[in-house]
Length: 173
Image (cartoon, rainbow, N blue to C red):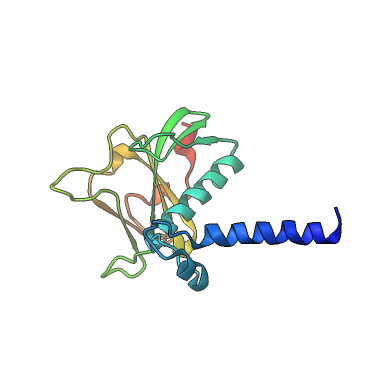
């Protein structure tokens, strides 16, 4: 191909791109504005949750566990193949400090929608990630009986969940 033919082909591709770019697409947000402002349609809570799930996957792989994501919506976030067998794990994340005790963190474990418990009894383990201190709590599901839990990372804490802080033994027992 000569130079003229390449220019014509380039112009044709450019014209075709412009044609498709001018077609109005039905999207729920202005993608050009999003691109310019680095705006994402997800919420901050969704991003914190995604980070927690990513960190959980990494932590599992570092321990030679196999974390599996469900292919359809399920009450759990992962099925983890580990020395104990196959466990259904729900991941929660928080950065919220509990109010009067500023050294505690509060995590919602269920949503009070008409009194319906959000967390299924089919879940074996609840993994709670506290993002400001980059710390995990691995709590057996049967021990969580309220709609929120308070987690105290202090070394001298007497919290009932203290023994589950950075304790992954629930995957081995």
